[in-house]
Image: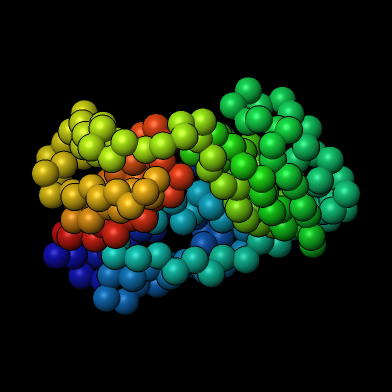
Length: 222
């Protein structure tokens, strides 16, 4: 098990490795395996990338993200301009059914709502918006309404378990993950060795036909 000092150094090194951010802008503190990120960045995309980088580090139990986004004058945009840019980029994104996604912008913070057929569309919408200049934050409240009218529990469970076993990273932990279904909701339990595996398991569950919600109760065990 890494000490907090070792973990802090590893997170700092990972932030330096992440080319989309300036590691010097971000402070890293670690206590009992919990990483706290602080500092100021000039875009929401960098804030998101820093948290993602910290989660990649082996031994991190949780990430408390306290980074502030401070926009320089050239990056500041009126809410109306941001809203127009969001609508445009969603319209031009092949994966996003833009006519089903609603957009609200308040003080630079974008809220996405509406409904789409698949989780990948929900993710694509957020990814498209995250990198826009002037955006201070993104709340993704899009719901999933798949075209499949009913979920056949045994079939969906088998497909998710097969997907977990196909995943190169999850293959070694697939047997430790339990898949339960409650209606169209998937509940994941068990343990994996990293946050990346934790998130990959949820993505695999979301990919099953008819799933409208995923509750990820998988724990990280080092």
